[in-house]
Length: 397
Image (tube, rainbow, N blue to C red; front, top):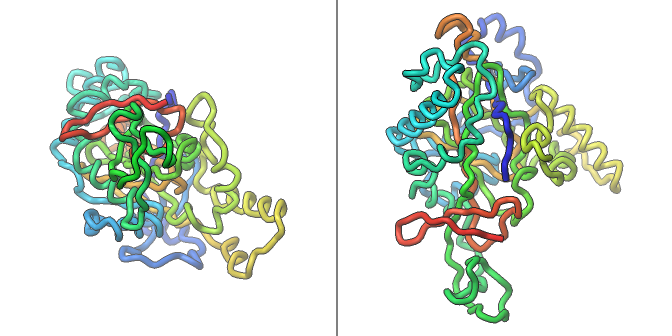
């Protein structure tokens, strides 16, 4: 699967870029049915694509990163789990250097100082940097040390498998090159406990985002929903990524909320077009998401017997619980397949911090994970799995 030629990514205003008066004037109506969490705090303005919305900081789930049951509960509740300092920060910083150095070789025109690109400073007219197509960079050892590290394999297994998973038919070594589960009774299959191993797609969604660019509102299902449903994304900021640089933003609970029921049944059942990017977006404006969700919910109700309760109707008065934050090197965000998310627009050049209209590149990578043996999306054939401490490529058809 070759998603997106362009890495247009979501970005947000740092909430320091607004005065106290602006904060008070723009606060608007409070959410009526917001789920209270450990880190509820004041909201702030962010640039969600071409629109502006209010958001709050993500819940930090790093304290439960090694507790599979609680981590799964967090994902089921919020649709995301942010893990502070989960990865080796030095490895992440080295991966960032490799990505920016490779980009400076192919796009020296984009950098303020192409001979010393590791600060990520871009010229005002830099656009469409093209890092997504550089799978040669994604396959570099310095990058794989981050994207295919043992810690990610283990956390993927903790969220993909539960203690309630049933035993399944699993092929013996001579039965199938694919290594996937099949119905019992088929030749070559033995009834035994299915290994709880995760695998990750060989393709990595490596992005460098310039001024004004963002990724629109979407769910991962439209890009990778053609296989079995047990799939999780690990979004990794390569280096520190502030909201102003174009951080990840998630609509907390949107994978299960009644507000998004129509979106999941219509948009969520579609697939991205050939461009692999904009055709998969719900919208490019975060401020439109609630209206889009309400219209989809009404169409769903009109097409079926309307069994909405008074509680369902209350959701129509709700607002989206957008969550984002400033990320540091070593942080990871796990995303459920159906959670609505985007990236903030890169507005780092608007403050003048680095000079007139000079912006800081947002560098990140998405990795996809699912259980070995589950059917993958047919568009993704190359997968990576662990065997005896090493990671190897397997072709699934």
